[in-house]
Image 1 (cartoon, rainbow, N blue to C red):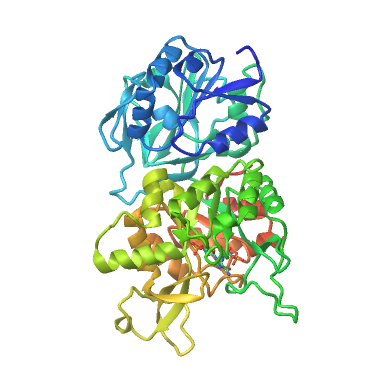
Image 2: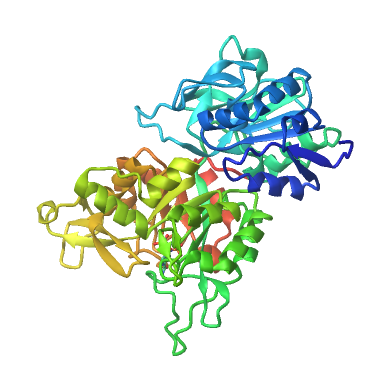
Length: 536
Ligand code: 1PR
């Protein structure tokens, strides 16, 4: 174990640590996987990325003898980096499905964020570090935004004060990192925190290096609004996977050729948007509802390649549902999602299937636990499950005309209608369903969605701005993050959506693909408008 370029990784198999592997390799290190407790004690440097629920993680590491080995490794003050749950497990206990005992290295209890006062939980996104102790690991990172995704957090107290190296504010001050001797752990994801995160990771891997140069930054204090680049992907008529872009969801050219619009190559564009400062990148496999996505190996390959270059969160959607192939083999939606996660997705996004699940739930009032949404969020956590909504505006004269929630619209309908409801669709807008965006959002939140991607077919590709009425209605109705989507055409549209609604993020496609507005220009405009964003 003397190879200075090798780091030991404790992956206890509970979920996706591909992003961590990608970051380690990107920084030029080899990975040795822990197979037995002895491997932990023999490590020169150990990375422990916790995934899944606290209780099940403790069950696994207790029953395999890893927990005792970890305690001993830490007692010997050997180089250790815990990530996310890998920080929480060091504490006495957690309230997650508990109380459940942790490793007991640090005094304190891990608690859920309190959403009763309207705080959005999970805490997803870029938040600024407040360094409270000088450490080599976080040198130069004070005030930098790093990426968090969690519902539970460790609280500072007199008993653990000596351990804390940084805190972060979200509703209250929580522990974002600890450091004692060679023992370090972070609640955020350095592997998904762009250049700042990679630099922190590198400082752990090669302590003598100064790490990558920390980018310039400004002081910040709350959760930043995210700017997301979205790539709608499908095969063109030659069978190549291309990034396309619809006009109200119609992706075919209106010239005589009627070809699928081709705006570039998925991996190239995703990497470029990462470099340009996108806080997240989403891939939507827009014909996934038709073909079986695991038959769509190129899409998985796109994800694999993109995740080696993109060190911010990657979401993938399209075709997540139960499926029986031609030979009669049955695939559960969970298998489809697992394959997406294994290929490098940090989150998956469900469209059509979530509409059917919500309709069934509203009809019966019973959570069967069997829908793709429920199953995937149970196994991977709700922070990993996005529901993508594709609604269309339907004007009405009065709210009494429909059983769905309406809004008084800011500009009247074609016959002077003052109200509208937003009807959900499936199969990429092809079929309309008897459920509104408001009802769907509330139902999927209860079924385990961790985030909502809120599109609007009327606005898609129009460049006329986001549908503020819709986004306000939905973002006021749920306590999970809402991503505003469809219609961005100018930097002002981004500040407008953050000023007038509770959206946590804004997503755009066309203006970025057509290079009309660079991501940096959007962010600079937001800073000028007083909206906190992550700057490179
Ligand atoms: O139903 O689970 O298979 O998922 C299918 C997914 O594919 C859904 O997330 C659905 O939104 C998406 N999708 C299906 N058909 C289309 C299409 O365009 N024909 N694209 C489609 C949805 C909408 C946005 C778009 C924004 C921003 N794309 O993601 O990127 O509207 O565009 P703009 O900034 O250019 O206005 P399932």
